[in-house]
Length: 345
Length: 118
Length: 166
Image (cartoon, rainbow over all chains, first blue to last red; front, top):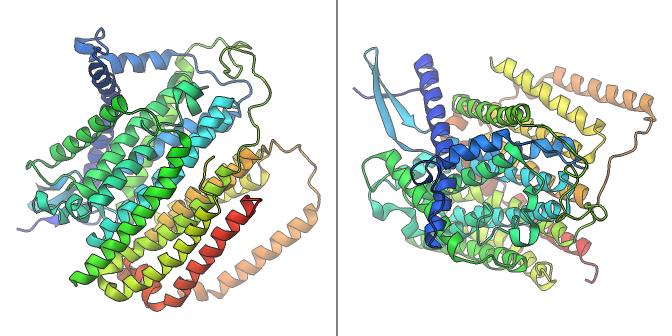
């Protein structure tokens, strides 16, 4: 018997139940990775600098994220007297929420077939498959810029304002280059749906788009790193010149939200990269979620490694790289892909 | 089709509840001992000098304006990329003309030095 | 259920719109406008036009509002001192007129019942993005190419506005 795709019309309660379970699991796993990424980052960079990193809370500091969370919860929530209150309070939420909801369109496995009442239903392992999938991600990622801009402005502190403005100019510049870089993939895939893009790459490792679009992959790697403000593109924070950039005046849980957003964004960029270029959940092992998580962890480790290795670039170099190198390269890549596809036809 | 947007709505509700909830919780649990110095903007321990909200470099406006133009160009490219294989050579020439016209603008911006960050 | 949701979002959209014009701080006003755009995107989704919804957020909320926010923030526009509104009567008359005219048009009902070639089923089968692509790159080729000239003018305008020594 062929399994029917589970939908709201053929089995409403099963659909809603499956949906809630999927959402809670994905949300829980994301928050778990966010918490332990802070620990992993300190450990990885610690060992790369021949230090040990956190050791005291639990075995090799494994309880450190929980201790940090509790500590931040009990800290005083300071709103500077000169701050603009409404944007100041909204800003950390406005940066975390978009990064948490983008994960909805990332597929993490083949369909799960369940038998209920003698009928077989296929449950796609993805919170939802939108046919504009990647545009949804780009739209939400574009909203993240507000959080940073507002945080910087509303604090009414010089460091925050500079950090916020730098960050937003950097984010919009690299968002553009990232958006143009991935277009070459859609010229091959003919769809914007994340699920179908993975299915097209599910044959073997050789079907991964990274082989057909190596330049787009490298471009997205660089722009993605800049988009989430990681070293060597962490100008917004630039602690040696701007104290802590846009979040200088923040404390307590609001500060924690900025931190969570940074790691959640790492997960999102890693998931997009895995889905578009590295076959998503398909291959190399037969277990979908394991593949995707493995690729996400590998990318996050790569980012930590980069952070331990490279110094920060200068702001003028950063803007120059974005506008004068990455943007023309992305356009050239689109044209070259176009020529190759037309010649093949 | 609207079915596929229901999970997103639920996820938005959860994410908002999480963000708002944790801020409110910490506000309730955390101690409150405000002081004049504590609430002042941070300036390396010195009393703040002047206002933070000064006018900033025009560069940032240029970047934002150019971003709008090129973002719209990118928006045109998405439906084109999806249709590209079906449009074939015709589609390629069509988009080639579009991109070349915009490249003229890009070269102009470059030559005028609007991309310099001196 | 869908109708109820529509009215809920419509209420939020209208309320945000009111905040845009009444908020004293320009930044709060801009934020309310972003929220209005977001509600419009929800409407596009409900009208089975997800591509438009994504573009609405990407271009309006993600690009144009960012520029407006930059201008507000960096020109250091503070909170406007509360002035007694003048011309209330004219505003009320104008608003009522606009409302009446729109009700008239809605009552005529031509827009609501109009049936084109592209029905909901076609959108579901072929995908909204591909349909827009077809319309733009096959049927409306010339306007699309002219749009590039428009964008070129915008680029030149931006540079001339911002750079004094041209």
